[in-house]
Amino acid sequence: MRKHQIGIHWEGPLTVKDVIRNKNHAGTKRDNWAGKDYGIYQIYGRHILYGRNALLYIGQAAFQTFSQRFKQHTIWLKDEWKGINVYLGRLEAEKYTDRNDWYAWRWDVDIAEAILVYKYTPCYNSALKGDYPKFSPFKAVRLLHSGNKEKLNKIDKAPEDYSGNINLSLSLEDCGIK
Image (tube, rainbow, N blue to C red):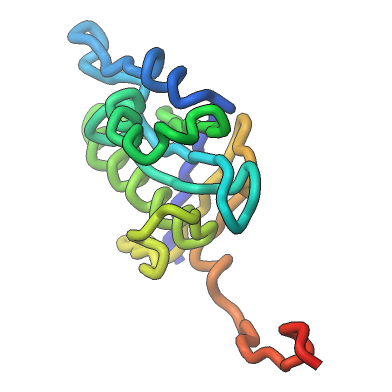
């Protein structure tokens, strides 16, 4: 079985304003435009059903910096800025080579986001929640989280986390009905 591993280092908590003001390093000609403010992010805040510090959204900033991406989120985050915490995840770069760096990194960002959204089902994500992640050409993918990952597990494995026998039938007592 061909397995793939992706390391993600998390930074946070940050405010939306901190992200917009300070997370805009897109790279320079000197470093071949290898900016450091790209990757995956988590947004936590108050939710009407789940209360405070609920996982609201998981997204990616791959074609634009975290700052640029969060400027697009301000429409729905603006009223809630005071209670929002943001965690930025950067993929560990030592495995990306000059020959394949962009394509391999981009695939890793896509699959990591898909696995996290599918597993944690954030309240405000609409895409990817019901889409079983596609791992091809791999049979399994493992996400290793370091830093302040907030509510994520230290390791997320797919498809192991989604397979097995799950009993979906509930009795009336399981639902609180006697």
